[in-house]
Image (cartoon, rainbow, N blue to C red; front, side, top):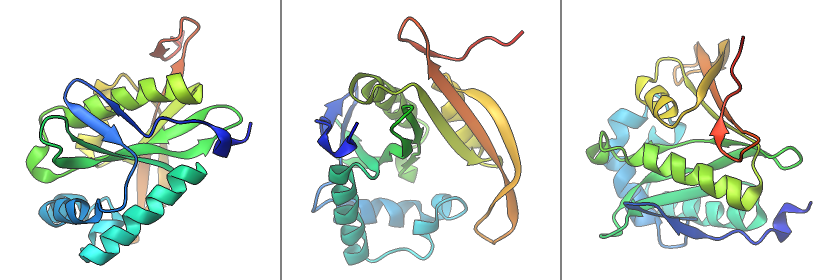
Length: 197
């Protein structure tokens, strides 16, 4: 399979969200969300420290748009469906096209947290991956100290599969532990995790 030949829908909706690939012009809204959320993002997200300029955010968006078209990375921005306000970013990353494995990442602007938007985006992306990418395995990885990220994975039905000790440097360059959550496509087409004895 040649991923670049896949006809992937560039947008879809959930109950409250409009979700689409990044587009030129998104940089202003993206930058405003990063500025608003810098204190919450900088312990976990390298792009938030230092805060990028609007021009750097626009360049980032345009590169993400190209990567989506090339199927190198499938970033997805999510917006309030009624107002089209930029809420956050998610997507499917570190793809293994041969076996249908993808990793979901996410962040949300600080003032919109705690309303279930990220969980809704993740569950929508799970269905998108099943319908359009024939995904068989989805992962969420996060720093073991990132409690909010962990809760999203749990609410979306992911199973804590492993804790990788000293797996990745944190923002201060010190070894940090990574949690690996996973969900698999079961025989009936639903997402779940095989029961262990």
